[in-house]
Length: 283
Length: 158
Image 1 (cartoon, chains in turn yellow, brown):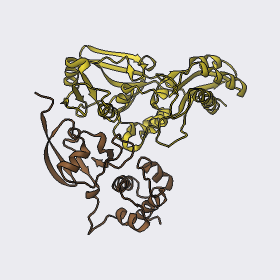
Image 2 (cartoon, rainbow over the protein chains, first blue to last red):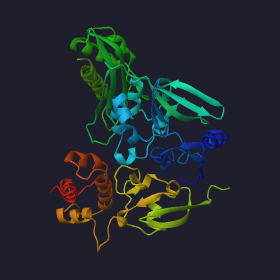
Image 3 (cartoon, helix red, strand yellow):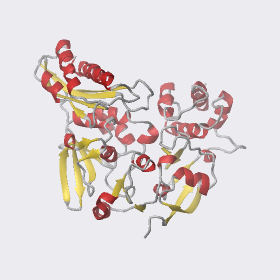
Image 4 (cartoon, chains in turn purple, green):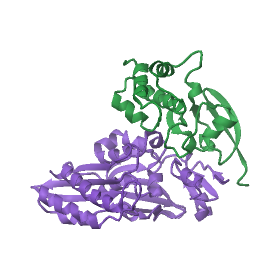
């Protein structure tokens, strides 16, 4: 790894000032579990690393009127073990506990993971299924984006070089909502998914309501499977309808051939795992 | 200011305070092995996957190969050398010997440090809990059965 300037600001304001100063030549670092690998491989060559390790106040999990607020510097392990998360958004506990190993989850943060934007990561499908929004802060102020607007391409997001992800907001789920996360792991338990599906929905008088389906490891970004949602929304929650709707995901994914499977195989598995996730929450 | 400038950091390793000057790119595993001479901690994959470099940072298992030394400024680190001594082995170290929990030994420091953190949090883990916790510590010799038995023995379950 080559030399770099290491900044370790003690306040959010200082961190935002330093980020603003260095723009494209600066990279914020939270836990560093993803960024350090990229730096070792010379895939990131920013001269200025701005560590957020000393920035206080961004690692809490709170229940507020508009939902669950999770600070950007909250560690994966703290999300998966949080009683508030388990109670109000068990899907989040599922997706965060599926990431890598405890050793990584002790360090990797919620904001860092989203900003890393590897499309095979577990949390984004869960965040999409739960209609999460993210708050971005910069020296110039703050803005809020739906999670679906964050991811733009492999490792690319709408987060600007001078912005930090300060918090994720998860709106409350109705009591009747069910959720599921299915991760297809044919190799090892700590691997990235071959394909993974998060789903959330309700059945009201036999009909599907408020369905959300999202996938990881299926394209250059996490995939929000709106065609599947539209095919089932308002329809009867039957095995036949689910089977038909799940097939619609084949046209929404665009997987790569790699050592976890061919693109054709992953597309087939996207259909299978979408169907299973829908059966889990709707039947 | 220069990118090659050294950073003065202080950290506690196995109960002993150290002040060290390091470049920003020095990894924690290299600080432990080369600056402090604590070669019990191994580096194998260098990308956080294999678990050989597992140490405790403020009580939590972390990958020392994915941690910058400057990130450990002010932290309390425990390595394999801090879990026991040749004269006074920890119960886990003794159990790994008794149960044949290692062969070549390269993964063993990481296994024992990770298992130490498990037993600190969960004194009587089930077999599934042991497997989940140690999932990130790869061993190419034992086939894992003896490692799981070692943890069960150290926690008084065997």
